[in-house]
Picture 1: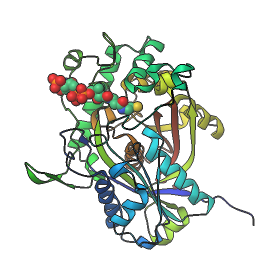
Picture 2: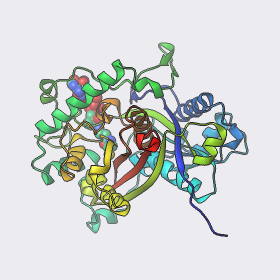
Picture 3: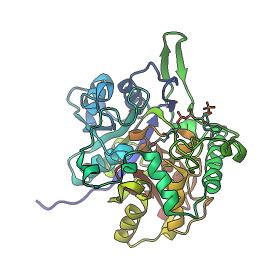
Length: 400
Ligand SMILES: CC(C)(COP(=O)(O)OP(=O)(O)OC[C@H]1O[C@@H](n2cnc3c(N)ncnc32)[C@H](O)[C@@H]1OP(=O)(O)O)[C@@H](O)C(=O)NCCC(=O)NCCS
């Protein structure tokens, strides 16, 4: 039977406020409960979607053990009260987990296997510190397949500073200050809150509480503050806790649907999935991954960066964002890039972040009908990048 690819749209996104790992908001909250909160919120906000019409629940986590194990897409779907007929699975591409959940499940819609999916991610870096339980094959080092620095993300960021001497610590710090400023402004204007779901938190000592805002942002951060910070990954290095994303807890989720099905159900269609691309780079400089992923994608689409009106890039490290901008000849403070700030301020619970980028892009699209295309892009440990191209369904050209 001939097959026709279907258009896929981003309907809605929601996330828990992000917390600081360790003694933060979710110190005594399970990771799977964060996912449940997100799924329930997506269903609450979209009552036109009959829960039994969800065809798949794809949830990413980097560390898939304990409360992030047990095939979290399926277990969270059951815990969220979705009908037992709704299947789910777990997915992992480290930091690009949720991004991959969206592209994989979205591609399944395009293929015709699904009508509606929920895709997202979770990382409770307090309960599951980076690297928990990993057992790298000794051949990586004995056969010099990678340098030891490739296995520590902060070291890969220091390597990037070596690779791009023009990206100084001052430039990285200035980028980080802008990220903090943009998040503070977006919060003051109520932008970030639109996609947050208030989340119950509990503490044996303090009792119950409600998380209603991200915990990591440090409004008012100055260059002077950042200049004082230690460089934990290398003596006299360039990467500090101030110009890197932190260690965080949080969950995200999104509803994606076939465009015709969304219309039939009366669901929003905020942006259209146009294409996506993943690429590998040397693991020692994993932060540069978004460059070839984006190059590959733009080439396939016959587009250039001039066609892109908004870019949501994950800020794992300032240096890695700046390497991307430098490659494409984009100014460090270009207004198209992370207009509401990014992970340096908001936090980066690894496998959850990709869908946060998408929900922010979809909100920005609504405010910018003059923009037709936008990107969500991120770097990935072990040397990868992933980029997704989206089309604004509010684009004013549609009306012409
Ligand atoms: C960089 C890193 C090691 C810092 O961890 P940490 O030491 O637990 O971080 P903290 O939040 O406690 O910050 C350390 C210090 O910097 C200070 N600090 C952090 N950000 C600051 C800011 N914007 N302004 C002023 N001070 C700041 C903190 O107050 C703290 O000071 P203190 O030691 O006097 O209490 C950790 O965040 C990290 O590994 N980040 C990268 C995560 C990662 O690799 N993700 C995957 C990407 S691929």
